[in-house]
Image (tube, rainbow, N blue to C red; front, side, top):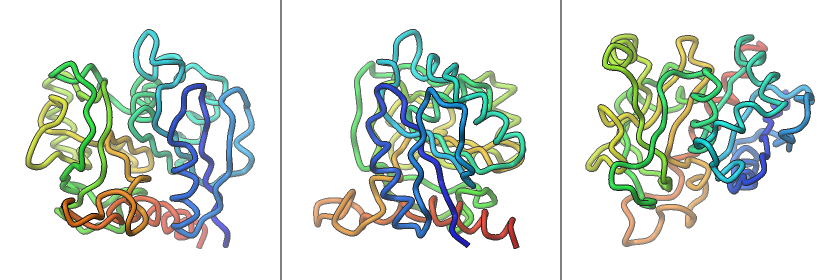
Length: 235
């Protein structure tokens, strides 16, 4: 079975090409999709990539959440299709109300870029099943509006239901409440994270030099997990 994963390009997307390459390395077929289309072209999973869609005007991800193709993304997510939002894509998912909470300006008011330590808190999702629960990984992080916020009651619900999927370790880079780096929905098919796994899928690219913390492949299991989820659902 050939798994086809769509990557949606918005005006201002920067990492759509890297996401397509990560999908290819994971053994799936990347499919380029356009924000102005209403056609998902029969894909099995979706990636909303990083960047600065529409220049991050109004709020990061807010205009992109209203793009024509997002109507199809919402319908697909409700049907159970795996949907991944990376950085700006995570911002789109919360603005589209596919995930709760919001992303605000980093606490120190500066753009940040670093190799970020993370802990996988929940490996029972379509995008994290190839990790071990509690596994520590390192993937690149780069954002200006990465502070995850939600009401205390919502944070308690996310924690209590195991929907916090990734947590920052060592340092909280952007002021995210409870060190939250990524969350999933109740069904486990929609997942958003601020770090960039697509930049850590090949040795020698991403954190892979003697001065960095880990090899450059800690991001690959996010994509292989989704491929396995699609194959498993079709079996």
